[in-house]
Length: 180
Image 1 (cartoon, rainbow, N blue to C red):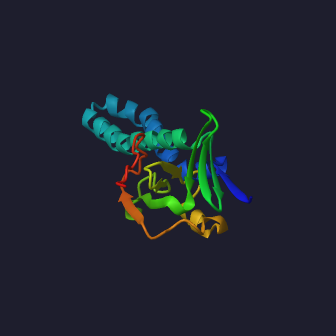
Image 2: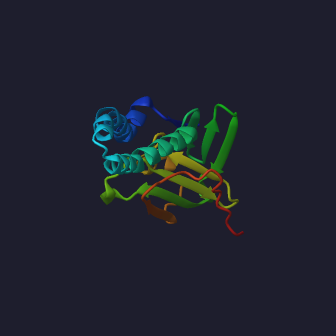
Image 3: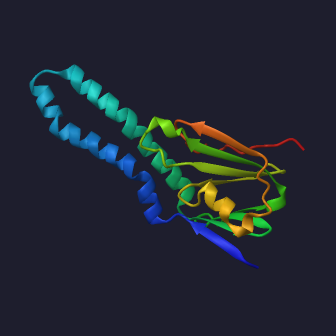
């Protein structure tokens, strides 16, 4: 049986998180270069505002990075003609869904017009009739890769729910239980 396997690749992770780490680097650099001058001139308000402003961009970005890291590393998404599987190589857990039983696809992406550092991170969740779900991050596979793949023809794309979020974090216990 033919199957396609997808894993998080280092080049894709670097490409999607480079803006996050750029803001962290700017935050750290500004603390080494600007903060001593502000302290010498007794400009504590400016010091506070600079750290608050940069912290509001760098701290959520680092949190999102580790959130996606936990849901992507050591995981493999396997797509076959009849099933989709998420294999966790660390815990040896396998979640398998039948393609014809997938009832909702929830796409959680970033609001494109906001230009925040985590703009390239998104995820989608496949949920079947029994309430089992698989969350796939954009580090492993984009939603466009799913639709252009020849083995995903049996997945019904009529029930796509699109959530545009400022902060597309993956909730750990967000299993969608559907009524029978």
